[in-house]
Length: 452
Image 1 (cartoon, rainbow, N blue to C red):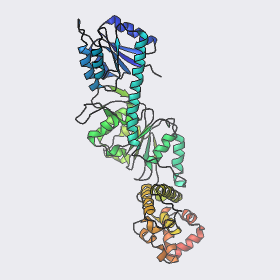
Image 2 (image 1 turned 180 degrees about the vertical axis):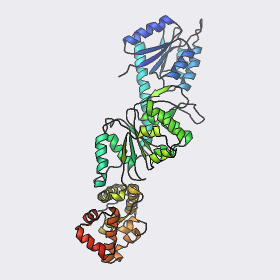
Image 3 (image 1 turned 90 degrees about the vertical axis):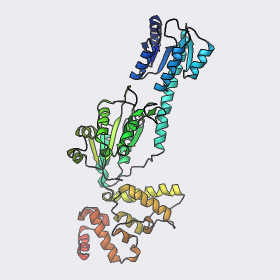
Image 4 (image 1 turned 60 degrees about the vertical axis):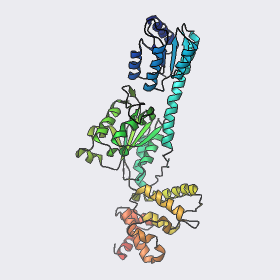
């Protein structure tokens, strides 16, 4: 653990040296300055755990007015910095005013070592608590908007994905997840984080593509109070929140070239500045990003930086569309049924046979997200103990007929299901036959009978 760093300010060099020696012997690092100007410059340049400052700097001044006025500047610059003030000309009035202006405690000169050290330790812990609270507030705000879906991936199509998660999850390599909208890229990102050594640290998600140019830096890097008109207080950015953990950047292909340049610098160095501050901050963050775009094509057409792509896709994980994950469709549907049933207070025993066939035969252009919404609708619309095909409300060409299978002849149903099975398995007769529970020769006979 690093030593707490105290900024010590006094216009007398012998006082600074005495404090430096005392603090060093007690496990503190002391950074010493001798004027209000140097205090402000130091705070702009780096982060301190606490400030111990004299109230008087001009020769023959004993009112403490310089230090009191400086407190106002300090609060505007970094309102979270704990400050302890000291003076040889102490009075109750000066102490009270210093506390009103933001000082955390007051020490009279000559100081008593035990009290001074106790005050500093208390202020350091208070500062850490404030920063932890600020980060937790931002994390809780985000978590309230995020769900934590379970990863269900039993199908052969998802086996490469499962293997990659197991293999690269524990590493710190940046990962790029690709796939259609709604395919479950966020779920895979959370699985990677859970499998990593960072699992006990936060995973912070942000839809990077949805951030307007004007708020991109503020969201990712944070800002200080007064940095712009609406900056009423300091704000922690997503990189700060994810320090030690994982930052998930969704829709990464949609950010502008200007935003890409700002992001690249952080990925290369781990360093950034909050808006309105020249103080450089450094973080340790693993980046997982996601997109439904072809980033190589975006690079070729000049819309995405090649050097940024190299930083993002140390490992690439492509996700299959839901229609290629036949074995997962009913498992996911059952999971969503349980979740939405609990949410709406309805106990349902599952899907009837026709509804199951409707689920398996639908093309799912919206992938897992569309399935989730379809099951939620079915929970709301169902009137019996099981979900029927009509409750799902699936739309699109032949899928409209699936809600009316009861009205179809057995021959028509068989022809439709055979056709859908072939589509789902990209024309592979052996896989389609296995999915339908038929031998290959039996499926060929049905293909001939139905003119397929």
